[in-house]
Length: 529
Image (cartoon, rainbow, N blue to C red; front, side, top):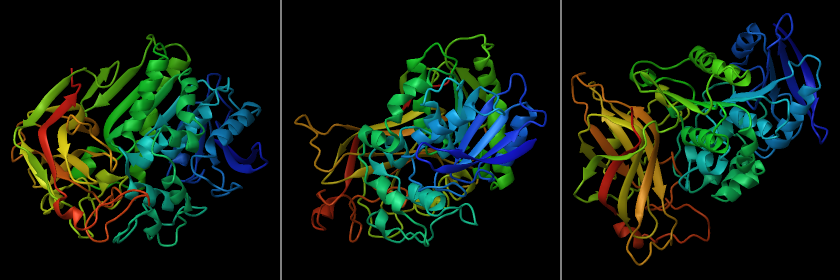
């Protein structure tokens, strides 16, 4: 492998540091040029750039890795999401003119690098022949910053502070905020000196498609152009961006149903840690590199076959695994359409009011992105709280995309956080899926009574390991808040947050902040064949 550094120009004259990794004998006759734009360091281990470059060049491909604007050795000011559409197109046009390029370009990357891959592909440059991206989405506001109108405080605060709070990355990774204490909004988060201006800016955008348009230049709509070429995507059930990745696939499949798009779903978190990491061991940087390169080993054949027209099939395809690694295939997700009740609870469920404690349900997750390798997803401490209700039930098998639907009644502002968990023989209570549902304060449910509140717990393919012995009961863990996972809305004492024009109950009005769930049903949308 031969590598060199260049300064790629942008339309406004800013120069971005760019490394070019070539096969020792130059690109092969069928070689591709993979384009990776990253805020984590173009030579860094966080994206496993050395390992990925070695793998791709060994196959005759080229890898171009670039520091995004304002990071590491690139010039300019970094503004997350907003800058990537233009900068991505500029890099693609520059690469297409270079003599060392293999000619056919594939934007690629995971997480934010996956986002930059989508922005580059949205340029619809004729040299782009495909996209490979994992654990990402162009739906920045609706599926990255928020989860059903609940701001993802811990995830975004720690990520922004680590990735965009300084020009380089902190010396110690993973980076986590210690001692969350009480905060009323993102301006109160103590990030040990990291610049949070980007987080405050992101917090201010509209919570709808207008916000996605403002941040990404209408990228979500421009993805119609991305679907013209084969798109290979992957994500994990415990990945916070899983819903967004799946929606990218569904959108591409709907727009170009004859194109050989591919989606891989696996029992992993955002950093590629497997389900076994929650049961037996923590991951290392070597595990991270092995996991990322493994994604390319598994998914590159799908892209090459589609690009070369050798796939032998038309239309999208999904490969997915349950938590034990058993693999399945389908033409869509969920694999088997349907709406089946897994468990129905006839008695009303009363979710207590949030406490005034600083340690609300959800605290203690040491690193959200790499959740399976941290304390999460063990929910034992959460189930012992006074402001949490645990609903236990028996189920032989749970599979497909899970949704929790129930009639909701409450006073003032309220929100429900739901976790589907299973008790393990060793006593741990491991989270299988999690979601939140919120209705804006003052929203009228209509004269016909309260509307059903739907909690989307995200994608899952989890099957009960029958005959394993011990208590393996299922449970729903319900609470009104999960701090610091989500920014508080309205709680006792100092727990007040939200825009200034939002009505929040006074302490007297919060005296009965219970939520009553009736007709509570746990459903699977789809299932295993």
